Length: 304
Image (tube, rainbow, N blue to C red; front, top):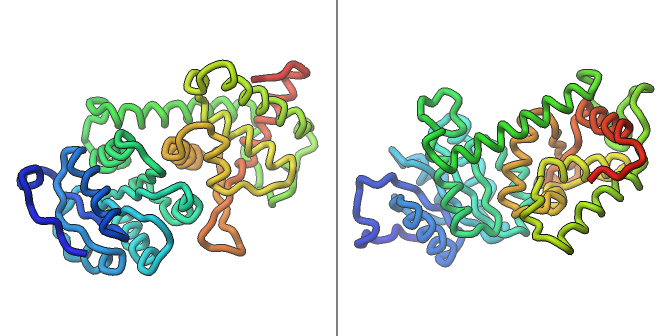
C-alpha cells in the first residue's frame, strides 16, 4: 500500500500528521476520509505487515489510525507496535473496526490513549481522534481539557464513574479478596440476591424502549453493572462484546465506559484461558458486595 499523494485538501503541512495503517485500499480510503474531515493530514498510509517498521521511521505524528476489517497477517504485530508506542507516550492511536472484531481488539487495546471505534459514525471517528491527540489521557499534560468539547465529555464520563465508584464503596464493607469465577463474594454478611430479581430489573429497563426513545434513559454504567451481577449470580462469563450489547449504547461508547469502569476499579478483566484473543469482564468483589447490599435495601419493589 502506498502513501496518498498530496492534494488540495491535504497539502497544508502545518496540519497535525496522522499515520494510517489499513488492511485494504478501501479501509485506507475510509481512514483517510476520517482523518482529513477531522482537520488532520495523512502522513503516510501502509499495510499491516509494513506497520511496525514504518512506525519506527515516523519521526513525528499526532496519532496512529489503524483501520481493520477482519483478522489477518500482521494484525498482532501492528497492535503490539501501537501498544508499545502508547505505553511510552509517543502518541495515541485510534483503532476502527466492525463489531465482529470487538472481543479480539478489546483484549489487545488496553492502553488509556488507544481509542476503539466500532462501526463508528463520522462523529464518533472524529471524536476518537480528537481525544487521542488532545492529551486527555495524559495525567502530566498541561493542556486545558475543559476547553475542548470532546475532552469535556471524556472528563464528564470519568467523573460520573468516580461518583458511582464512591457510592458503591460506601455500600460495600471494604476491599475484598479476589473471587474465582462461579463463586459468590465470600462473606456471610453479604445479602443473598435472586438472579430472577436482577433479570426482572433488566427486563423492566429494556421495556422502556418500547414506549420511549432509548436515548432518554441511556445509563450504560448501571446497565453494565446489572448485567455483570446477573452473570455472577448465574455463574456465567461475560465477554466484552456481550457487555457492550447490555450497555444499550453504541459499541464505541460502551467500550469507553468499560475502560473507565475498569480503571476506577469497578470491573475486572480476565483473560480467557482457552483463547488469548478474548477477555471476560467481571465485577470487582467490592462492587459485587455493594450491588447486593443495594438490592437488599431496595427490598421487594423493582428498582428500575
